[in-house]
Image 1 (cartoon, one colour):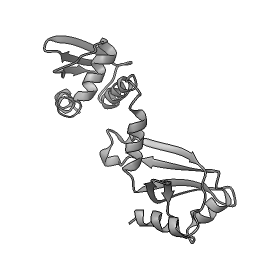
Image 2 (cartoon, rainbow, N blue to C red; image 1 turned 180 degrees about the vertical axis):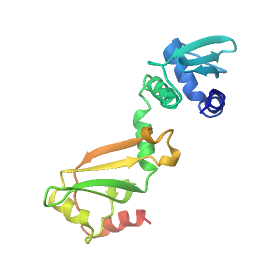
Image 3 (spheres, one colour; image 1 turned 135 degrees about the horizontal axis):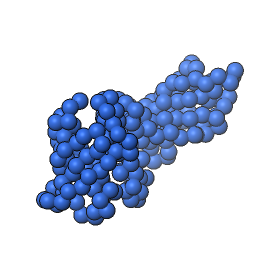
Length: 190
C-alpha cells in the first residue's frame, strides 16, 4: 500500500476517523474540513479548520507491512476516547441487525460445541429457534446456564478482519413451551 493510496482512502472513506484523531491528539473540540495531507512510517499529518496542522505520531515506527494496522490502531484508540452515551444504542442497533447468532454450548462430555441459530428480538425478549434434533438443543437442555452467544460483524463490512465488531453475552436459556406465545414469537422468525 503506497502513501498516496492511503491518503486517498482516508480522505474518501474515513473523515470521521480524522475528526476523532484531531479531537484526541490535538485537543480540538470543533473540527471542520479535515483531511490527511501526508503520511510516512512515523505518523500522519492532518489539516483541519482550513489551515491548522496536526502531526499524529504512531506509537512505534511502522513499515510497509505494518502501516495499515498502525493507522487502524491509531484510529481505534481515538474512537475509544469519545463520549460513551451512545454505546447502548449502538450495541442494540448492532444486535438488531442480525437474524442469526453464534452459539457456544457444552455437551454432556463437557466439550464446547460452536453452532448458530436463527435469532429474533421481540417485545417479550430475545429468542433463538432450535430444532429438537440439533446437537445444541440437548446441550442447552443439559447446561442452560452455561452458554454464550456472539454477534459477529461480516468480514466484508469490517475495516479489517482483525477488527471485526463483536458482541458477546454469557446467557441463561429457558425453553418456551408450544402455545399462543410460542406461535407469536415463531411468526417473528418468518
